[in-house]
Length: 74
Image 1 (cartoon, rainbow, N blue to C red):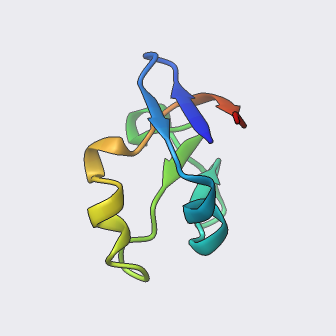
Image 2: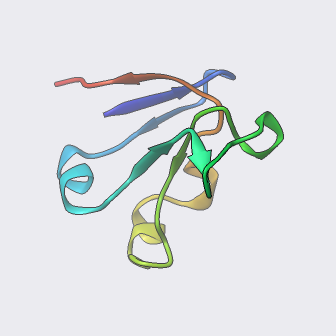
């Protein structure tokens, strides 16, 4: 799975990881739209608090802010 941000930053997520972990594409937080200054309107989130091992697979620098495209590739 390829996630592309407005600035063209690309993060590739292993399909098995996407099936085994709840990796989120979010457009709101606590019922409110995510502002651009906080990565919105759409951003990818890795739930490190619930799954600490995810941080070893996907570093914080790999969070995609302002997601514009999600591609499912072979």
